[in-house]
Length: 485
Ligand code: ADQ
Image (cartoon, rainbow, N blue to C red; front, side):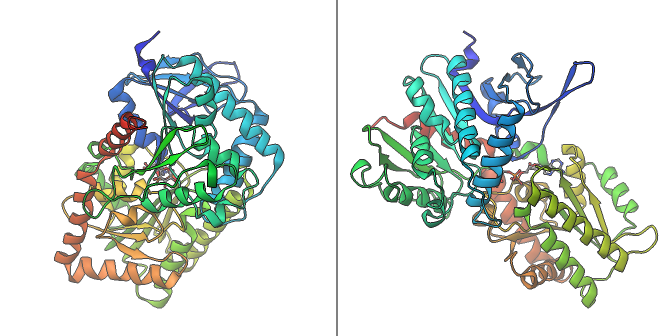
């Protein structure tokens, strides 16, 4: 067997998009997203193998190796798997539930059955490719049942699970009609990892509350110990499962590959600023178009600041890049039309011919183009209602290691626990976003030293805690898990 298979990552999506052409041929291109951004460098280093869905229904290419040496093992999903498992249970049940009910989750038994079936498919695919005793790293909320299924199929494997989105408080999680099955699925892992201590604590509390894994079945977890300075890494507590295994639980805040986000080419930045008519202040938003990201709220804040005269339409522009996402789900369609209506309205009210105040792109950009935007921006707006971490915030600050620029960041983004030099706002309160936008612009203009100190604090944090620190702290902890059972 290929020695890559001693390290296997399994995620809903492969790090590529596959497009099938009318003549039956297909093409493959890299696909953006937080998970891909976080994991690609790690797999490239390990020359590991990635099991996942290639993004087209009913067909999948044979396993193949990427240019960077990662072996990709596609899993075939049918159109009905996609609807029930992905659009349904993953994104209309779990996603809103885990993001604190920003929209109401739908509980649908058919979707749950599809979720179970597809988790079984993924587990079977891993079971076929993983070498004896391999380390398997299961990613994210779409595969919550995979650790439990794999544990039964392949007790020889070392299994880690990492959740990329928030883990809600037990009071919310207990709404889920299939809560016991999900918790038991997660406890199939040797190590369950979250971004934040709060997420890990929610999970630990839940294991004691949910019938079937609680009380007599599960021992008291250890208290989470914080090791290191203000921030939490490599902390862990343990849960004893009904079958007497010891599952470690910890917090591992994900980060970025800083090498990829140095400053952009000066001439490309100057060209962009010229195209924008040399504004005094460039605000920037970069998100998947998702209702959790608070894009509309930041547009409203910008609009109100123009209306009140706190910002001048001749001097400020807002660039908003929104990657198309989950477009067949109602709430995503509604979000998109609200955002696009607001962009049109604001430009109608405050733009001039040839000089819009909001520049809006609804598409993915290359890392190079993103870098140009990050470097050109004065104030980055990251205003999610809830976000596991938010890598965009970290990418922006990595780009401003020289201390230029300012970050306005939601206090409900996981990144807020680490980026202590950000201008923190409450995205549910448009006044709060406005206040912090104004404070950031004011400091950049009138208090540049303080602004630079704040930005350097942020970038220092990201440069000293990059994606390699995240991956190696999780994998070291996984290697040690079970040793003291
Ligand atoms: P996401 O919700 O996708 O990730 P985020 O962490 O911001 O959110 O990652 C988005 C990634 O996609 C970034 O690397 C960004 O550069 C890229 N991206 C966004 N818009 C783009 C565009 N228009 N063109 C090209 N690239 C674009 C989920 C969780 C987060 C968590 C990550 C990682 O929701 O909370 O931080 O996983 O764990």
